Image (cartoon, rainbow, N blue to C red; front, side, top):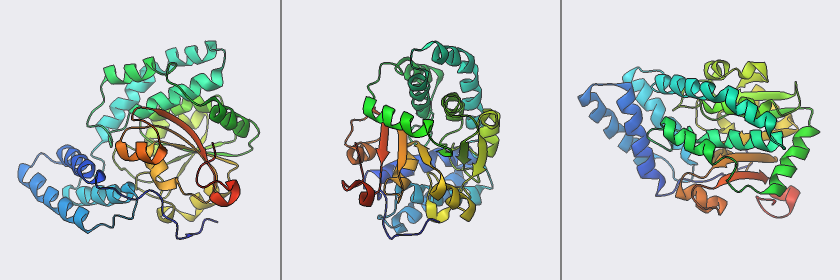
Length: 305
C-alpha cells in the first residue's frame, strides 16, 4: 500500500500563479453569467491563492480553487459542454485514425503518437481548443521527435505485463487513449478517471462516452483533484497503483503530482508551459515519453533515460 514518504513532487512556481488566476477566470465564466458574482468569486480565489503553500504541486492549488468555484456557483461541472464537444470531435476522427494506425509499419508507435497528440485537449493549459488546433496536433503526430529508447522501454514493459494501470487525463483525449489501449495486451488494462468533475479531466461518464469500457476496466481514483494526488485517492485505487506491473500516466498534471512517486511510472504528455519545460529539461511544445523510477531503484535520481 502507498505510504506518504514525506517527499514532494513539483512545487508551485511564481509563473503558476497567473496561470491559476486565468484558469479560475475561465471556470467562473463558464459557471455563472452573473457579473457581480464573478467578481466576488474571483476576489475569493485571489485570497485562496495567497494562502496556499507554494511547496505543493500546482494541481493541489487548482483543485482547491475549482472546488471553491463549484461551491460558490452551484455549477457541479462547469466544463460539461466543453467535454462533450471534445469527445464528439475526437470520436469523429476515430475511424480514420484507427485505419492509419493499422496501416502503419509500427502500429504500437503510431497509436502512442496519436495518444500524445490528443493531449492537446487541455483546457487547464489553454483557454480554448478548436478543430484547427486539434488537426495541427495530429498532422504533427508522425513528425514530432520521440526518444526511440523510451518507446522501446515502454513497449517491452507493456508486452510482458499482466496488469497495466493507465491514468487518463482529459475528456476527448480519452478517445485517443482508447486507440493506444487497443495496441496493449487485451484484458490487462485498468483505466483510471477522476471521481468527480474537475476542469475538463475525464470522469467515468466521459470515459464511457469515449468507449473506454470496450478496451479496459474503468475505475475512479477516489479524488476530484487534477492529476493523481495519492494522498487524496481512495485505498482501493492506491492498492491498484502500488500493485500494477506497469503504470502509464497521461498529461502534465499527472507528471506534476507523480514525478517523485515511489514506483516506476511511464509519462506521456506534451510540454505546454515553461515550468514543466524546466523540470523536464525539454523545450515548450516537445512531446514526452519518459520512464521515471525511484532513486533507490535507479541509483540515478528521479529519471532513468
